Amino acid sequence: MKKAYVLLLMLTLFSVSCIKGNPSDIPTEGETNPPSTIKLSMVDKNATTQTKALYSQLWAIQSKGFMFGHHDDLWYGRKWYNKPEGSDTKDVCGDYPAVFGVDFAEIMDDRCLTSTSQAENAIRKRCILEARSRGEVILACCHLNNPLTDGDAWDNSNNKVVKEILTEGSATNIRFKTWLDRLAIFAAELKDDKGNLIPIIFRPFHEHTQTWSWWGQSCTTKEEFIGLWKFTVNYLRDTKGVHQFIYAISPQMDVPKTKDDFLFRWPGDDYVDFIGMDCYHGLNPSTFTTNLNAISTVSKEKMKPCGVTETGVEGFKDSDYWTKQILTPATGQAVSMIVMWRNKYDPQETGTHYYSVFQGHPSVSNFIKMYNSPISLFSKDLPDMYKMADGITIN
Image (cartoon, rainbow, N blue to C red; front, top):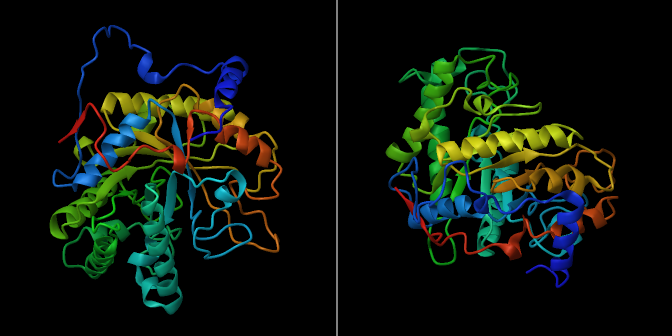
């Protein structure tokens, strides 16, 4: 629970920042008697009970506030590495992020064959289990290497890679299936202390609106990207029997966007569960507000939960960053999460590759102000995210 003075802080934020009421309390035009039961639909009709429950909670929590998240927060921080129960976030506010972001790429591609990646994958697994033990939410991206060229995720030198993946029986097709096989094996090993499979919000092929990746718009046609998305979902869900994934799409939205921009190369309502966005808009809260408005609108129209799956400013030093750049734009919006990118382990502070708070940063006191806001949700604020939300059904 938040500290005792949260009510006073609420009143202050309402007067200073013009906080709106709960989105659920604001009737839409023409709405008089909203339905008592909300019906949502998932990509995987055979999703596990806890996966369906998490999905319902992602929708429900949008009317209460946003879950604060941080990529790799439990694995390393600015000045520490692989310390059980470690967290830059907890070091500052005494609580863990509600969302733990992690990358599955080195579990899947051929880096997993190296001893270094094997050791790191063991840490990934530990962190996921630790997050789930506290009832937190796990969000996974994958910066996969290029399965055709052997380059990294940023190797966009060959526009045939997705075509080859989709060519049944080709060397690249077989190789990519092997990568998905490894993910399925890893997912089956992710179980909570009661033996239940741990649900994952899985966002493959993120930032597909950009040109930097081998799955991005410079290397693929619209049809190829949609084909790749559907192939991946079908293979994991139907061939490998993975039923703990919530499938999230996450275009990159760095400048002001409209709701139509979120439907760029949309794989179809039957193939997307969660609408995300990676928003690297700099110190421009008006852009963030615009894009939060847009994604909230798409979420409502599609009846799919949404959230900011990556954001932040590398090496920021602003002492008022959290209230000005995150809390104020998020106020009155209907998004389930806002997830900051990572703080690179850099104990000598030789660089500035960090996107969130840590001990000694100029924004520490401002971060605590955001933490104490009733609309920012951290680990201790979460309801049981793995129990079906009241008034919601999933099919």
